[in-house]
Length: 275
Image (cartoon, rainbow, N blue to C red; front, side):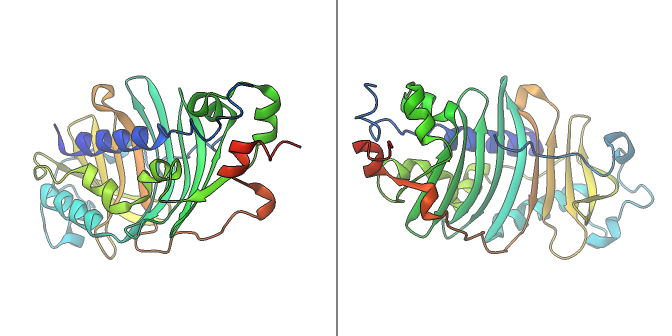
């Protein structure tokens, strides 16, 4: 599989795995009874970025004359060495629309949201051994099997809280470890056949676009570390989508939900949250 397509597909699998979270069993007593769209619009259109290696103004000099393939390999190596980052993306995997906006670290902390069109969405926060999960109504229905409108109305807007190493939170926070996510991206083979495009900018960060045929592209930062700023794949067969990376090696947001927004797993099991 091609260099960029493989990484985009791996990210899609990671999102899918993270979203299939088991809440069933936490709501045993009650069983008898929107994520903001990600703006992934580039500051330059694809048609403006296309080019061949060595195009004037391609910013290849920022990498000491390295080839497009070598720059792509540098970007992947920089990604794999990150201690923390934020990724924001939308992916279409076999008709399943998936979205992610997640800050995560190699220490296992994370904060953000994940969604799938068939499952619903949830916000997630993990800090050390504490975890909070705020599902939307669709997710409560699909993951926990709760279909009572009264119960769903009482759950609406609340975070479910519990220890990160105990069920169901342990499976819910699997997506929170950056090392695990990067391992899923795979080392794979080195880039081959990449061509140099023009300079561009992603969220105010200067970069250069590398193309992989007509279907995929990679934007690499030209200032500082050669971090990847964007993976874009337009081939539906391999998981079309755009993933933006930022906030490399910056702390994961550490705000905890207010007590008034939280119910515990014990509250859910006993029905004590019902007013």
